[in-house]
Amino acid sequence: MQRVAAASVAVGGEVVGSIGRGLLVFLAVGCDDREADLEWMADKIAHLRCFEDEQGKMNRSLLETGGEVLCVSQFTLYGDCRRGRRPSFEAAAPPDLARELYRKFVDRMREKGVKIEAGRFGSRMRVSCENDGPVTLILDSRD
Image (cartoon, rainbow, N blue to C red; front, side, top):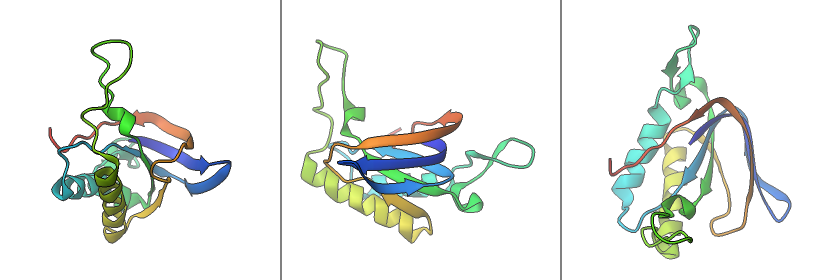
């Protein structure tokens, strides 16, 4: 995920989601991921103190700042490039499972009171962002 001043996602030239200050979340679902993983992720993202306070320290959460989330599905984060010249995506969840968990993640974020926009699962998307910091963080429910 990246802390952003603004971000948007377009499909076929049409903007389907845009936010102001908040987090751009690239969500990858693995073949072993379950609902408990997305619940952990949603809670972590909503409460992670990655926004600056008055002293310039990362001490405020998304919920405390009223920040927004733009969630974009990105199975390519599971690309394994260790062998050969083409990434392997064997660890990525099959599309039906990934789509279901992606939608549930978005719902969980809304339930937590987070304003969230989303890309279109399975579509070719153009993502634009104005990175703030830059701050880029990796979360893995398995670690």
